[in-house]
Image: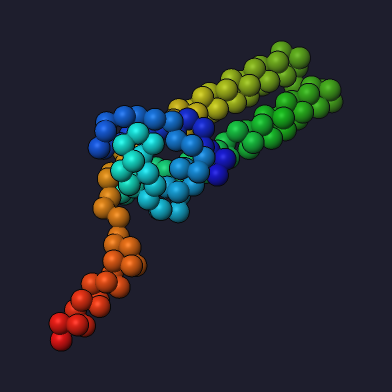
Length: 143
Ligand SMILES: [Zn+2]
């Protein structure tokens, strides 16, 4: 996942907000619980709204490369248009200025959308297999 920068997690148990490490972001992506680095409780992102927001981060990560391509194309087209006499020097200058402005605004907005804090809920881990086996044995011996 490329959008791992700037994502924070908030532990519902110890009330600490911390920067998520790439492996923690991956754990959230595959909906796998992981330990809180402060209180060692098992955490998981269970809010469906935030989960949707988290999944959308991949799309926001695409804004930067696609905007770079778009801006380059517009700048070249404007230059060529000026060169062949379709637009004036001032016109070319205006087009370049506007496309650069749009470029930076889009990157700013994408960065703003990528900076989220996820509310991580404490989950009770599933019983380990050994414990389940012991319960099954106890039930069998009772019969
Ligand atoms: Zn915690």
